[in-house]
Image: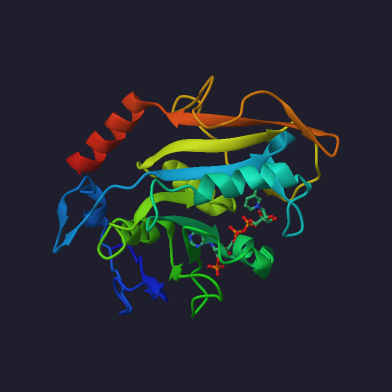
Length: 240
Ligand SMILES: NC(=O)c1ccc[n+]([C@@H]2O[C@H](COP(=O)([O-])OP(=O)(O)OC[C@H]3O[C@@H](n4cnc5c(N)ncnc54)[C@H](OP(=O)(O)O)[C@@H]3O)[C@@H](O)[C@H]2O)c1
């Protein structure tokens, strides 16, 4: 059994009750809009977003090694974009990543925040959910009462949750900003299989070309999961 469990502190009028989701590994195999026991599961896109410098570095001493305000605005625009008012995206944060942000950053428009931790006992301030792992956060977003509210699940780091997201069969796109410079880092983006994630030449809504800020060059990149690979993964999941 998967020990997935989420604790909610979300006071949206749709459902004020605390919900707890216990997911079994069997649930995991039947994720495609199927009845999951008594809970209908709506597949949601899981997307990864990160800024990565040379040698795949993403962080140092619990913070970002660079100061790129326009790149950060791109991050905010991406994760807060929804198709219509009343819809939300769910952001999934590792615990350190969550606490490294200034509280002034919250609340974020159109966003529900899920923090991952196996040791925290209560939902952190300004977050909406505390989950023990990515799978249970995704499952929570894909089920009543959140499924009709949430459009996209954005995984915003750090390393372990990025890795879990890349391995997740619903992860279709990876938004990586290529920071074209070297920074000393102590946290790194996981290896991405080039057979699975293919770099796109262009992607709607993503500025192309090389940008420069504070003397640092960077470019926005999007990697798309290879569909053939995804079909194979889903077949494996469904066969089990
Ligand atoms: N460049 C970028 O785009 C970017 C993006 C994000 C973060 N960062 C940087 O990365 C650093 C923080 O990342 P980090 O990797 O050190 O820490 P992190 O992932 O934010 O936090 C690690 C903790 O979060 C919990 N956790 C993380 N992943 C989990 C998972 N999949 N399942 C369950 N629990 C999970 C665990 O908490 P418990 O021990 O309580 O179980 C773990 O000890 C900072 O320097 C930040 O600035 C950079």
